Length: 515
Image (tube, rainbow, N blue to C red; front, side, top):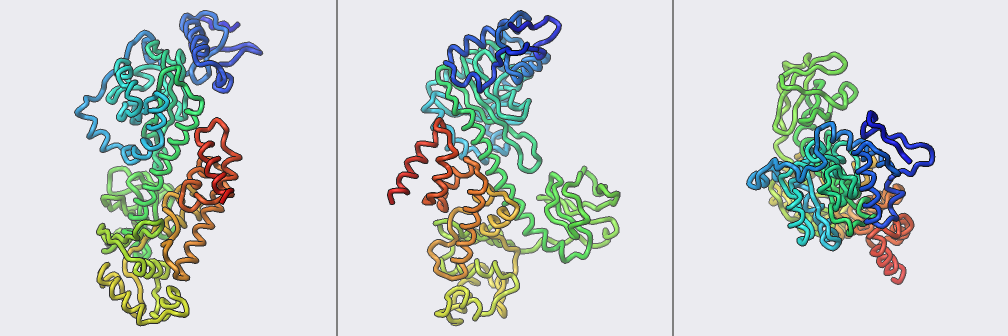
């Protein structure tokens, strides 16, 4: 038996040796309704400061203590409404999670529909902004306050998966009478926080909630994995934004001759000259001067997408001007290759995409003879190259493509480069997200084929080296890994039989073995 003393408080349960702990692993095999009855007995005993045969899980006990300290009434019916319906569209549009909602819906809403669950997404304060899922549950959810505009923080409605995940900064499953408010004892919910890849701060919570009889032990893993996927997509978007900033600002740093750095609005240093004279992060403040950790002072020039810092000894120099032209090439996957020049998207035929990609790999320029050899091998000739160069200059602008030698005069970025840089620092998920498939898969150019083979081999090697089932599953559905038997073999070894993805992996693996 476990005695909870009147002066001990909710969070001060001290079970004697051999007492049963109400942890998730112990209860995973129990009947949900039997588990709910046991939790209700614990709930009543703990709140009455009486005797309980089973202690609440530590995460639950700590949450109850926080919630009661915030004066949450266990008999309270529903959470407060903090946003009117006509405010929600603007709040959603401004929130960073808006960018990953298509991913979250594709990953979870279909499963939630089939399993009689709801998918909810909150902001960092615990305010629900999005809700999707089983239509039969919507009316029931409305009656208990599970709808957009409500506050599900612990301080507002007590222990619940959304609020508790925010409080502890980790995935949480709250079942039945683990909720502090009795209204939700007929519900079970799983939530995981989503972090800002720039600052590391929590920007929201992903939650799946449903009635007790629909509880699924695989949901906890699925929600946590989907939250990580959302963070990966946000990280890729940040990498793309960083690359655009670098393209606009970094080249002038190397030409300035000053001790100069370009930092993001959050103070993260993207580029610096010289690199060993700058920290990884700078506290910017609001003024036009900033103190560096080593005692130096830097002048701050503010741009819309970040700040340019120059050490005080060089403050008489004019701030470097952003380069005039930015060129970004997307050339992986089966879609039409596209080059974006100063925010103008231009689809490219294969020959011109091959030519442009090759030029991006040789920033110092190439002669017509060199280009012909790289693109067409021994059968190439300079006359063909000159004709393709004229066509490319017409599309992207003659001022961006110089001759003698042929070279690009712009800040250049490609999805191949983005994936390669991510691989170099072992950001495998970011590399995989940047690469949509083989490099120009219809190309027979020697330079392109070698580049594509190297990128494919690097991604495959990096994925297999992680032994991460989430990453392996993503790669198994990626154009570079969907026909890879070794990837499917390793994934089949790592996935639990209870994982809802294991059946699909087994089918694909069997098909590969039969081919």
